[in-house]
Image 1 (cartoon, rainbow, N blue to C red):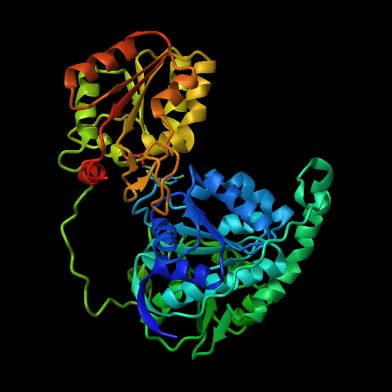
Image 2: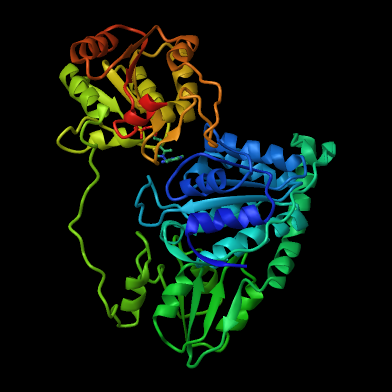
Length: 516
Ligand SMILES: Cc1ncc(C[n+]2csc(CCOP(=O)(O)OP(=O)(O)O)c2C)c(N)n1
C-alpha cells in the first residue's frame, strides 16, 4: 500500500476503482467534473460523458441492473435534472453497488445555487456518507459500494468544492474484482407501475431501520469525549474546522445520514450548550433543536445561513482568528477569454437590438456582465429557449434565446421542439464552440469523441435542429460579422422559430482540434 497526495475528486474516483466498478457515467459540472476524468485517464474502467445528468443516472442504473458496480457523479444541481430516476430508484432498489457522488458548492463558486444534497438523500430515504478529507473520500466511497449492495439501495457520497478541489494524502489500496454479470427478472421490484408502488414504498420504509444499523456498524458517527459543558456537533468537512479550533470540547462527529437520534440524544443530554457546524443548510441543527434548548448554529444566527461555512466563521464564534491570515488577492471577476468567439457573437446581437435576451449557463453567461451586458435572464441549464417561448406567448416580439452547444444537447432540444410545436416566434442562438468550455473542454456529441478519447459517432447539430422542425437553421462563423448580423436580424424579424448557430471552436482548443 502506498501513500500519495491526491486531489479530492481523484481520491473519490480511486475509491470507486478500488471497489471494482465496471462503469462510470457523469455529466460535467464543477466541483465534480474531475471524478470521471480520473476514472477515464487512470483506469481501464469504461466510462462515458452522458448527455445530461438524468441520462447519466439512468445509464448507471442500467449497469447496476446487470449486477455490476457503477459510479455516477455530478454537481449538486445536476441532481435536480436526475431527480426523477433518482427518487424512484430508491423504491426499486439496485442490484450491483450504485454510488452517486455529488459535489455540492456552498459559496456558489461556480454554480447557480447553494442547495444541500443531504436533503435529497433524506427525501429519497437513502443513506448518505459525508467524508471530511482525502482519505475518507476514498474509503467512504469504497465502503459505500458494500452498503449499497447490502441494502440494495443507491448510496450518496456528499462532498463540497473545498474538499474535492484540495490535495491531501491518501493510502492507495488494492483493486477488487468486478462483479460478474447476473441478470434477474423481478417484475414486482423492477417495474414502477402504480400497482407496485405501495409495496415498494413499504419495503423502502422497512429498510430504514436496517440503514441505521448498517451505518452504526461502520462507526461513521462517533462521540469524541472532551471537557466542559459545551459540545460541538461537526458534520463532514466541518469536523476539520472543529479540529482547527484547538479546543478540548466533546465533539460528535457526523459522517453518515440518517443520523442516529439515540446518538444525538446521548451526546446532548449532559451539555449546557450545543454548537452545530455543518456546510450547507442546517439539516442536523434542525433535529438537535428538538432535543436541546440551547443550540447555536445557523438557525440561531451565530453562523451564516448563506455562503460557505469555512473555518473563519467557526473561529469567530469562539472569539478566535486564524494565526496566519491567508494572503488576499485582488478580486478577479471571470471574463470571456481574449479571442473568445462568444464576444464577437454578442457584439452582433447587441447591434441587432433584440427586445429581450433569455440566457443560459456556460462561458457565454459571462456576456451578461459589463461591458457587454447582453443577457437579461439566466435561470438554469436549458431554460433559455423555454423562457423565450413564455415571453413570446405574452406578445413580446423580437425575443432571442442564447444557449451553448453542450447546454443545447443537455436540455435545450426538448424546448426547441416545444417552440416549433407551439408555434412560438423566437430566435434561438446556439453558440457552438465544439466543447463544454466552462467545465474544462469536455467533448460534445457533434465532436464525436468519447470520455476515453475514443472515436464516437458525431451528430450534426444543424441537421438535428432541422429535424426538430425549426423554420430556418443557419450556421455562421461569428467572425463573419455582416453575415452573422443579418442572420440574427432576419431571425428576430421573421415569424417562426429560427436558429442561428454561431460556429467557431473555443479559442483555447482551436489549435488542438486542427492538429487532430
Ligand atoms: C444542471 C447543471 N449541470 C451542470 C452544470 C455545469 N455547467 C455549467 S455550464 C455547462 C455547459 C457549458 O457548455 P456549453 O453550453 O457548451 O457552453 P460553453 O461553456 O462551451 O460556452 C455546464 C456543464 C450546471 N451549471 N448545471
